[in-house]
Image (cartoon, rainbow, N blue to C red):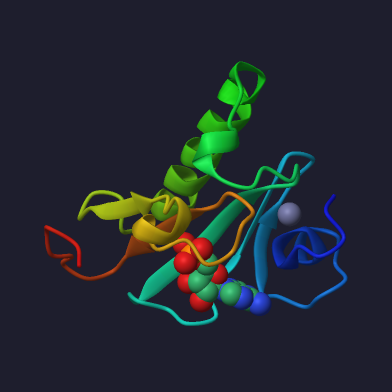
Length: 115
Ligand code: AMP
Ligand code: ZN
C-alpha cells in the first residue's frame, strides 16, 4: 500500500467508492466520471504504479484483472455485444491515477481509434 495513493485508499476502504466486486486480489468500483453506460475500474489490491512497473510475478494478477472484467461484462449482459478494456500508461497514454487499473467500458458502440 502506498500512503498517498487514491486507489490504495479505495481498496482499503478508507475512501468511499461504489465497489461492485472485491476479493483477496482485486477490487472493482464504478468510475466517477463514466464514459459509457457501463464504466467500471478494475484494480489489483497490490500497488503497482504503471504498466512499466509490471514484473513477471504479476502475470497471473494482471490476467485476473481481465478475467474479472469479462465476468462483470457477462453478468451485466454486454459481453456478446462487445466492450473495451483499457489500460492507460503515463502521460502520453492518458494515465491520471498512478495505481495500475483496467477500465471496463460497455453499453454503447465505441469508436476507433481513440482520441
Ligand atoms: P486513468 O486516467 O486511466 O488514470 O483513469 C483514472 C480514472 O479514475 C479516471 O477515469 C477518473 O475519473 C477515475 N477516478 C478518479 N477518482 C475516482 C474515484 N474516487 N472513484 C472512482 N473513479 C475515480
Ligand atoms: Zn496504490
